[in-house]
Image 1: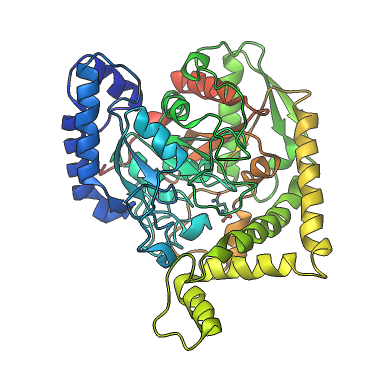
Image 2 (image 1 turned 30 degrees about the vertical axis):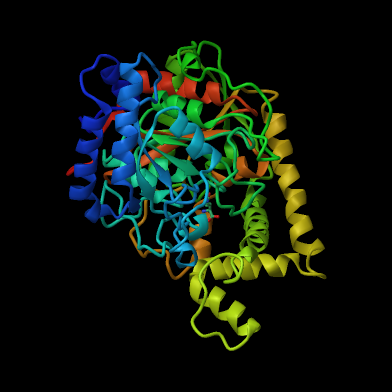
Length: 483
Ligand code: GLN
């Protein structure tokens, strides 16, 4: 039962092959048995899950239908869930029970999803390895000695290990696509503004975007359908109708123009990944796509720009966690300054503190123009590169990551080495574009992802290309040994 995708679950529930309650019991037992190896959950919500499953079964018995009605999922632990701990992977929020549901959580619950729990993540979504969580590192089910990627590593490891069919995640600089690549999943970062950020604890507000992590493009379409849409509570949410994503899956790829940026194949890319990327290009060519070499000349500046802008926004967003208004409070403070200093010093981990310091520095008087303003100008150049490229092509294709998942601890002493691994994903966030990672092969037994980028609001096109690719390849069906 645990091997089923969301699409298969929807068919099984509709055909009354099993109930949502039965499926939920099976998955909860599987999580209890296998998650100790992975550490992919921060909180389990068994009681909520069973009551939601029973309610979904009752709605189906009353004649209601829907692809998500009775579907078990989990939420990354930065989506606020009413009455349930929402920790953001941090000691700072270890005892925070959200007083309301995030819009994404409320929308999915209304569609009938069953919440099995809250998944582990890098602290405040800062990281690419899921090692900065207060609740400990998450392991990659493909090799327990390797990282699952981050910051949505818990969602990715749980879905890859077949503990559940799909999960929510967020992507500020790659945190949906990169863990998808590292664990053989399909993950979609929507256009900025497509999915409401209300109730999603902010890391870098102009870059953050929620989206689905699942095993197939078909399932990403189903989950995204339940997440997307205008929300008056999020002033950056966009008031555009949400298309039927499942209906977009079956378009022909005949004549689709795919751009492959020459800058992607630089010295930093593992040649074995380059080969798998070329294989995916050939597979799409066979389906009728036309390949064109393109250029994204400002890509080389993206990492430094991102690692100024994201920490700058984080330093502002995280100022609310002061031990007074929000968050952990230290014991016996001597005075107000001591309270602030020790609450923040004890409540935040090392990487979060590093980002706050970098961000506050970049925003300070005298440095603002040199760092923050400069980074914003680069951001515009990166966006302009994409706009020019999309005049010539419909999709941009390349590797999701320069290397496969590294060993746990391998980059702990060198944060910049970890930042460099984000080179292919962060540009989409800087430009606000949608991006998808899909399984494309293996290197040393570890999964490799191919990334597709599309113009604004063309999530349907990304899902279409990935689905057609998945109808003609079987990488996405491979299962990690032991799971
Ligand atoms: N690795 C990037 C960072 O640490 C992206 C994280 C994310 O997308 N949340 O900022």
